[in-house]
Image (spheres, rainbow, N blue to C red):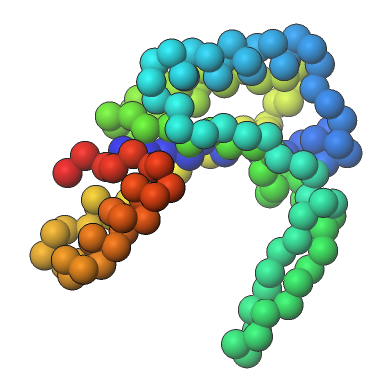
Length: 146
């Protein structure tokens, strides 16, 4: 099972402030422990929303809304993509994320990633499944366990 651990933004991340060296070191150690356990697929920090954009749809047309966006607590500052055996294991890993001092009330989200292997074999045409597997192979993405 794949899960995404989503780190929420804070006023500091939205201001573009760099974390302390201690937090950077703690994050590196955390990332190393994920990698050493063989569960880390990806993990990145994000720039503030001022450097982002949102796409909104209305009447079948798309419009671009440039950042920054309000409510830092509703934004994300980074993520980890992990592959583990259960939701409980994903939560265990999320509980180990180093939390900077003074970030009470700012939390993490843990979301299961929907995967083609979650679709029963008989509900996805064979051609579609083959196309999905070929794309994953080209991208170097691990094939999900069947």
